[in-house]
Length: 114
Image (cartoon, rainbow, N blue to C red; front, side, top):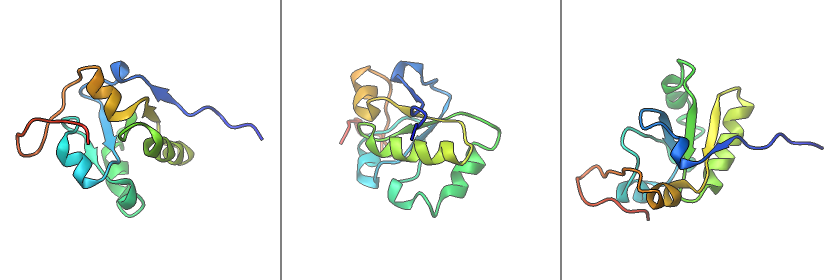
């Protein structure tokens, strides 16, 4: 059986005004995240799927993020199967941080990857 390769992008290819879906858990998100990202933990994803379809309703590409890329790959695969233009961010938040891309916290503390 042949499977199409999982669509993915390097962190440098993610536009800062793009739709980033962060599927990490609450404690990971609180430590640091991409400003403006939509946070739906993978553990809540099925129940909150409507939030994503609303955010991406205008046909925007969804850039899916987790810590290193495993959870986001699973969510990306699901989204692609649903006909949504989604890509996995290679290396996740560790790569994002390593590339010096901006991160924020909700409380203004210094951001880091948990």
